[in-house]
Image (cartoon, rainbow, N blue to C red; front, side, top):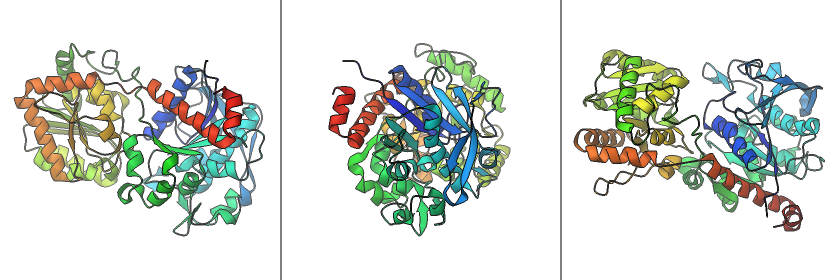
Length: 504
């Protein structure tokens, strides 16, 4: 029997390529396309940030005005623009509210979060549900993401419980990053408008603040993270950021689904950004040409005889930038070159800029993000370095595998799930892993990779071949999400409704 289509609403703060700061944007920009290919009716809603160009993406203003009840603030109003996710017919809707979203940054400016982020994302959450009325869209499932829309499960269980469009919808909350929780002053309860009875230690209250992520974890029909490893880790004190007990209480409703890679964009055989396209059969020659191009682009000497290590990352402690800062002087004592692309905490900009000045023949740094340069690093580097303190999923290690660039990773979260440690005797594995969160462990593991480059050409060739054979597809992830949605509907509506709806 064919699968009956689901109606699914994605509500999030990011969606690639329109607005993206991390893996959250990749998921919201990628997964709906593959769900639609399975036959499901998917709608996506995000803010219309200042950076989202209406003309570039051919956005169409819908008739009418969306009215959003904001509790003590009163009704707020916004326009709605409609577009399409690239490469498919999935509609994406942008909420036009100049006061909340007409700003340079998504969440912050000059390293400081916007003072009204609480109201901005409560508005997004409520507006996403109100939008269903404007669209005459009745979702089976509302898929919320992180704290920005984490309050949606609470709203579905309270003030929207009897709404004829969304009142029966199940909710799935995806936890992309537990570090950021949306904790605000208690007065936000008056904006939420769900009643102070929900400001308690089980639901919204944590440390005498309203914690939107905690409320979402408590109220969501089901929960998932973006890797099986991270689903286990967030139930521990090291990775739960104070909410490990809340997550542990919902452990039977928590699932891990590894993110997929868009291999239409990240494919060395067709990548338009790199100097030479190559396959697993021509990887040695292709990477040599791409390596020279990367060296030239970054102003490094054109050397074929040294390993080139690459990083494309936010420069923050989560990504292990502090470990790399501590280890880099010793790393550069080896016969290596190193390129780093990214931005983040100001100290890192100055520190790695100084390193580039001290070691101009060995280290090059680009502060910022450049899509073409990111592709050049994946193709041109011999090894890709990801020393993350924690990594819910991670995508760059998957890109690296596809490009025959063995990753050097700390074994945590999605890095643990997606990279197999190199076995020199069996010539198995896809990369190099270390476990201790320390600069010494990072240095030693890079040393192992450099030794392999100089002394074990068969091992390096096997690593490249093994990595390029790996596939982490959105097709596979979409099937897992489909099953999770159906389970959530069964939980929300009951087995009898589910049988009548799906005949299962």
